[in-house]
Length: 330
Image 1 (tube, one colour):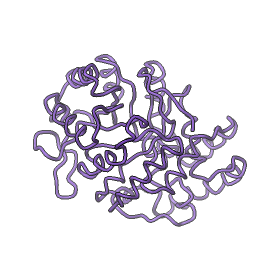
Image 2 (image 1 turned 180 degrees about the vertical axis):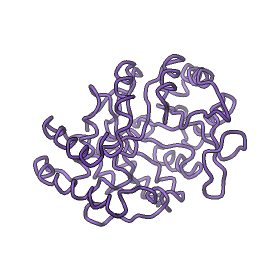
Image 3 (image 1 turned 60 degrees about the horizontal axis):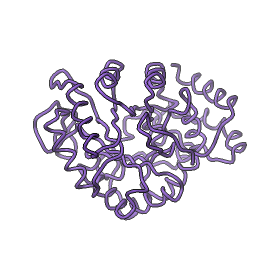
Image 4 (image 1 turned 60 degrees about the vertical axis):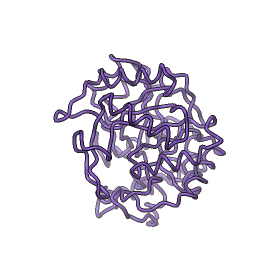
């Protein structure tokens, strides 16, 4: 497994991380087996995957609790990332969504983040978090200056409660506000070969400011995997219900492109899933793209991990881009 530095923090993490969204077991993904999730996190470390990403909102706290149980006695061996700024236990904030009988709001004000950090540390059974990420950003109906949020996070860093600061789902302007107000080490954005909107804006900014770009949903929730190509993927839960690739003509066209990459899979002795992960790690300028892949079973993490050890030749990276751009123009 390749390793990379996270921003300027000095943290060294696996180039492929384990995304623990599904481990929360809410209506997005359906029920999870907590014991299997814990075994998956342990197996990840055996495979060189030391970066685990979770959030309080995953399962309304349950996801963090499962990760905390998995890391107990092994905490120093993992790079642990979690998030803040999303609440379901207060009414104050801008509505993000309603799910599982609760109203989920955005609130990045320092007094609320102070409550959140203590709750996350308790659920995760740890004294510090390696990468603390603002999950969603402020909106006009409930404003909070990024300078205020960043000031509080920098204080947490001085106190040793967090080691690095990240932000997710940002605009270009918000990125620049973060870097102007403190030390931003990572941004986490939706990015895959089918969803490349972040490239033109954030790849140059991340290079300029020495910020790691972390891609979430790089496999498009399963649409870029062998299971999808072979018709074995179950489309259940809310997380896949609105993805166009799982339905009709769009899915058929995607399968045609993916089938054309089988010779590349043979060349690199890998699966389609691993080929796609390797392609994603090869994007950007320099070694600043980290890839977050969801897993809650041992077979899933074993599948994903190998993608972080494959180096594709440039001609193959370029060929795959040409194929996918013909399907999904920039």
